[in-house]
Length: 315
Image (cartoon, rainbow, N blue to C red; front, side, top):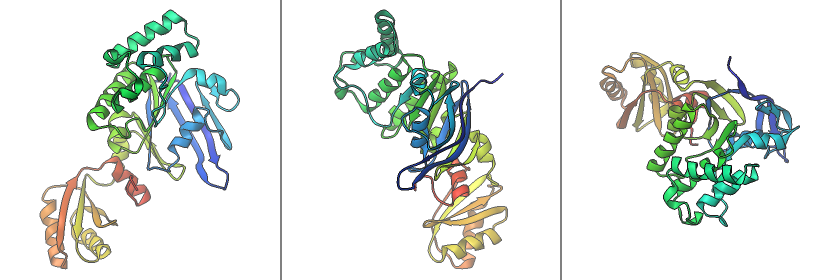
């Protein structure tokens, strides 16, 4: 039987001045699941996590974590969650090892238990050589790994990660993805927010695509991509009236299921990739359009987001 760890019912947050940040969200996250909130900045992802971690008080609806109501019993919720914020919130008065040790003590662990846990996590997160270092001297990737290790030290039921790889270099990002994969294999429940479609695709069991405080779609990354009625996405940059060009491509390119102008390009959805580039070029030439760039790709989560919103994920 699948155990539900996070539940939201009509969860809402309206800030002073009338700004509706989160609009009646219904959500369920199961034990051992990696659940991603994918959307652009301002979509409501961080506010949602803030409510689930008791940092933001909802203005409507209900939410529970590990069966504990986030509004009625916030102190109990804090005992069963681990939180990794976007910003580096390590204690700069403590060294790397002390950030772990004293976190354990804060959560009621005995001195020996906390010391052993700190030593173990330093090894697991490849931070042993910097154990006595000032946290201000370690790299951004190391600091993020330390934040994750600290959040896990007291063995939380749910680990919350808010934009965990934002600002990291590609190597550090891959290293963190590897850590998350290991945690997932061990059964850790994780909820993360991200605006990186590759991150959501490779790390998450299920993804909620979010914009303007609402969920537009929730499913596995595979199912979301399969919801796009195409197996090939052609992006074309050309001179002239792009709206007219988009209509022409949809009419004339065999297998086209959708064509739309997107900023300074035309995005064409096609079933069947065989010979697609010559077909697009031929239609453009016949219509008097001069192509300046052309690319082909498979559908991605960004394709899904564009289909749902008409804009790119990073807008």
